Amino acid sequence: MVLGSASPARLRVLRAAGLDPRVIVSDVDEDAVLDTLHGAPPAEVVVALAGAKADAVVATILASDDHAIDTVVLTCDSMLLFDGELSGKPHTVDVARAQWRRMRGRSAELLTGHRVSRIRDSRVVGTAQASAATTIRFADIDDATVDAYAATGEPLAVAGAFTLDGLGGWFVEAIDGDPSSVIGIGLPTVRLLLADVGVDVTSLWR
Ligand SMILES: Nc1nc2c(ncn2[C@@H]2O[C@H](COP(=O)(O)OP(=O)(O)OP(=O)(O)O)[C@@H](O)[C@H]2O)c(=O)[nH]1
Image (cartoon, rainbow, N blue to C red; front, side, top):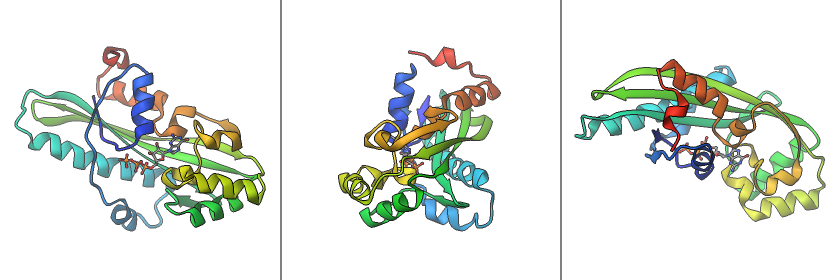
């Protein structure tokens, strides 16, 4: 399997779940793709972004001269849907603090889009895609805690400015949905997408 993602968290989830994928990072300009998706439903946005990453990684694989490839490429994209707005990574401390001041004490949905692309005999023989949504309830933390968390830098590089499995875990009171899709790759969703392209996930276990 090929994981088309630079996300260390996605790789960690797959390895803990028995896979040892090769990593090929796509160089997709996500903002450029987002510009073509104004008005699209949020679930379609994250699936479209995962698809754009897949197209780039598949092109890289097909450009190689290894024609005996029989593999599956998995790509994802995660964003937070809060008050009707999709947001990705904050990138700066100020944006992370503002995000937390708005969402503390409230709930939001972490959406993850997935694309599975099966390659055999140097061509794509099957694709499947789907999104997963998990509701997150955030603790009502005070300004000093928000500032301390933002200052760690952790929330800057993750969708929605929080992690479930890191420092952010102190501030996630409850979730309703698949926990792995919050971290960045929904295992139950991917299991069904792999089946759609004729791959039994148990055959991929190390
Ligand atoms: N560890 C952890 N990471 C999270 C969590 N929520 C979101 N993320 C990460 O936030 C990032 C979302 O940004 P994306 O644009 O989907 O992915 P990326 O990190 O840019 O990597 P690419 O797949 O190469 O685009 C991913 O790396 C997710 O793994 C979480 O709860 N825990």
